[in-house]
Length: 326
Ligand SMILES: NC(=O)c1ccc[n+]([C@@H]2O[C@H](COP(=O)([O-])OP(=O)(O)OC[C@H]3O[C@@H](n4cnc5c(N)ncnc54)[C@H](O)[C@@H]3O)[C@@H](O)[C@H]2O)c1
Image 1 (tube, rainbow, N blue to C red):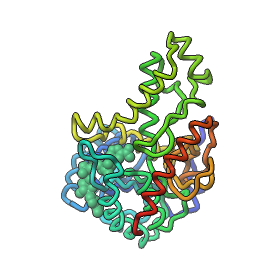
Image 2 (cartoon, helix red, strand yellow; image 1 turned 180 degrees about the horizontal axis):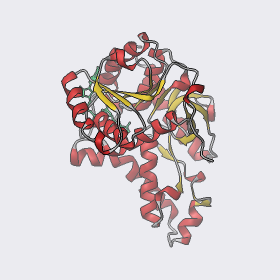
Image 3 (cartoon, helix red, strand yellow; image 1 turned 90 degrees about the horizontal axis):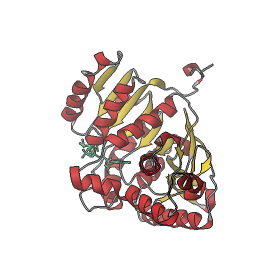
Image 4 (cartoon, rainbow, N blue to C red; image 1 turned 60 degrees about the vertical axis):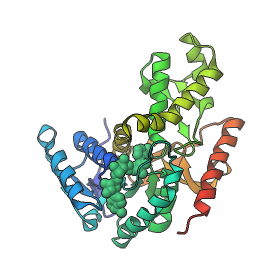
């Protein structure tokens, strides 16, 4: 029998039917649209420094409601987020063509210094889901400034990059991307890496499956696919100035895992507590995600080279985090 989620068992003061989105630009409004379309919440509150923008998006998106199911979508204030089960933060400057995610640090840490105290002062008990970039640094910042338990502050991390990897591999192997089990881990950014050594297609080691499909040049293909995944955002930004549909679906997937207490394994960003010898910074590795955010991280097997790259990725993030004035 399917598991039916029993919200009465949630010990925190949250309404599992409510989500708040802070920042209603391309990403926030696309996420709101995806969440409306999913029908998984009965209340979506939109907040933006530009209240009119939030209001316009709320009105527009709410016109989709008659095609889905009844729900309330409105522009609100921080007082409206108190009982939200998930607080999605998509506020922040976006990358300009040629700009890296890390270039955004100063601007967006400043924005977080205005947002997180608002959440903290209202004793919110939901899960904070950071989406703004650089997402790993901002997840770290959100946790430090909010004082929330580490499991309740997560970043969308490499959930999107992993979807991009699965999509590329699906095309390459002419197989349904949902049957590909592979993760991008580390920073959501230039130092991210594909965990090739643990990748499978429905349990068949990736290299074996590749050979079944007539591909034998593993190293070159892996390098090409990883580069394409890493550069996806740059390519999209170059061509249409922003990326938002893919991340909107990633937000929808993470919200479903939280409010359904799914215990889904997703590569979200969260505080590392000694996994692979990494401490005190947020980055992505597969983790069990449920109603309390990250329940447990999954130490997938990595080869020596992958562990070294993951540590390098962590060092880069730590250096930036260490220079922040929080
Ligand atoms: N994690 C990912 O995979 C991923 C993917 C795409 C974009 N992003 C990031 O998401 C962020 C938003 O991107 P976008 O394209 O929507 O940008 P955008 O410029 O379209 O929207 C940003 C919104 O944030 C609002 N805002 C700014 N300061 C605010 C504050 N203090 N309080 C409330 N709202 C505030 C702005 O008014 C604007 O509406 C960027 O940092 C971008 O890099 C992340």
